[in-house]
Picture 1: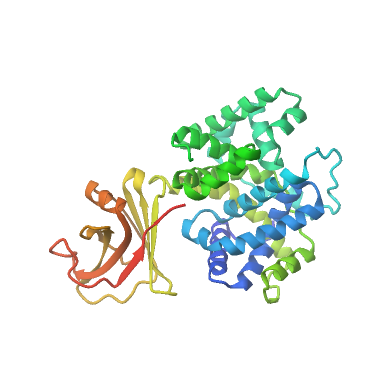
Picture 2: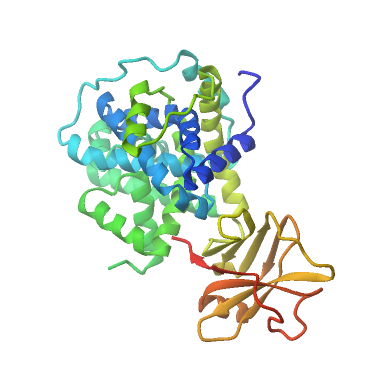
Length: 188
Length: 227
């Protein structure tokens, strides 16, 4: 872990500050934001879209949206990364509608290996979050697996049914109940 | 037509955010999202809650032509890069950590309830003097002080709801710094539900003695429903 790594609160504030400046039309802020957030967003897009060229195009769409909608973010005061990851995920899912008519059996990624240290480091950087961990523990393994396949991989009910070999109706009900338990736990 | 049943909205919002709401249902939901505060609010809730699942993601540095493409599409000038790549990677990793921590912290700090309305009090093109947040569901008001205008001696700043067709209703004094939070009375909530604007006046110390503004407002700003 580099010693120069900034603290969580600093980064969060920094991202929000950059978004505020984007809202005010400061293009230098968009570039700084891109340098900070694009690796994670590109990781998200490549994971869902599985085609590099398509993910590159989607990343452009995402930053064009961020630039155009930064004012909305400033008004809401949410968490900056949750907002940006959502924009990326929705764009990717939208593109899937046209692009993944047939399932991709042999993904063309990774063409370029992710930066060497990121794999090991990222997991080391992620602290256990007591509340979330406790809530996830309440789910069954199958529910948890379905939620991750959907959220991280952008998989539909049908995809998950195929990937896990379980009937579609079962998948739908695991996901519905998983979300329900998660909400009850997080709001309790 | 937007569904009115909050449980139905919540279930749809969760599956929309998760990504399992697909096809025409997804497109229909997206249209609702733009027009319903309830739908927007539930989506925000789930976006913040589910984001820790993103810890399974691996950062992948995009090739340089992507930024060139963005710049061309938005017609932006080139700025000199300010972040060294190694540092940027460290930050990218930290961002993942923030996602997890942030979602939890956000959930805890929004315990006053769901944000329903918000007003930013600032001079045109100036920095915000106060950020006013109304949590209608639980009847809470939260005010964050920013760059305040100069305050005359023995005077306080007072916040007012301006209900359409009615008299201003005091929402109390504005804090001189930090964050203030308090419960709203039934009358204040009633006034807010009919208000599209809030105002700030300079009043004698302790607030207007008459219950109505005693001076011309120094700010009148829109009260936005969060959507």
